Image (cartoon, rainbow, N blue to C red; front, side, top):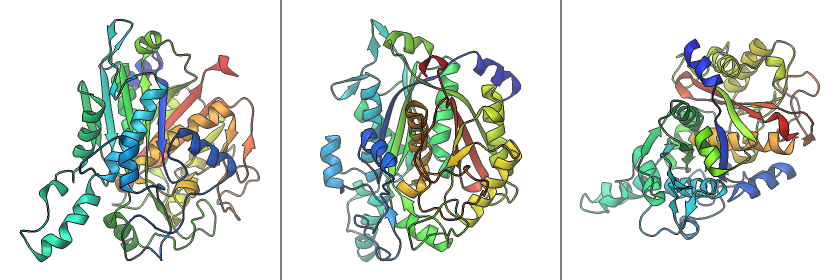
Length: 422
């Protein structure tokens, strides 16, 4: 967690969101994601694109395109992992909204000034889909298979591929902290901007479905064979998903050069690790509690000023219980409204923090709260707290977005709206 000195410095500087890019089971771009959220349309269904013996057993939130179609959208040729394709498509969209794309490359010069631009991408799957396709033939014949299918296996290769395509060289970094990965990418990006190391950061995450993750979560016995019911008392587990979500973060110098009247800023953030278990959250929600508390303290925001929480809300017995307890520890009995959007997209692993940061921006800009899907008996029973229908609000200024990963790695981001905007 940030020290008191870090928090004081951070509160004196602003980090704005200049662009957003999203691709998920509910849409191939930012606009399609927003429309599906408004309509309450899930993207989870039978597995179609991943080759797996479990296709008829476990629903998943797949992006509705095969790799050939994604390659056409990206404008790529050759052998590329699905994670790289998804990540590039989302990062490019974010840069386009920010006005920082020139042709197919990032524009480094604005008003005669060169901007230092960095990419922080997160992933857990990376090029594992290519590796999985390589090994069956290789195990039969050690001379079979093409080695280019394993060169993109590790996480950094995915980031490098995206950076190369965008023409980013000033700073390139990869984060892999399980389900909190892209939240931590955004957190690190904000810190680098505030430290003056960079002027612009593209931060987020990308993950494709793979046999390894599907089989691994099945081994943990936390997959739901039906459409998941996160934050419902009758929840049975999670549905996996895939996608990518990236934000373009700018500091005050770049914001002035770009001339953008940016509506949302990253007001606070914190990462904490309770080191309770390799995969389970602590029963008392220690890591989740510290992350939320730290984000609010950095922003100088009291708990009762938070109007909405985009929950991590995976749908497992452990996560939803632990997160509920942590929320009670932070907010007492004065709960803000809250919901989880994983019923739309599935759990997109390293991409969820980036996607849900974008959904949090939607809530602030549109003054909308997106409902949990398939809720019958909310985990938190206080009437009106768990959002079950699309809700139009007014005066929503601060949204907390939670991303809690395996190994106890928990992160919370606090997004705030400029007061002049509503």
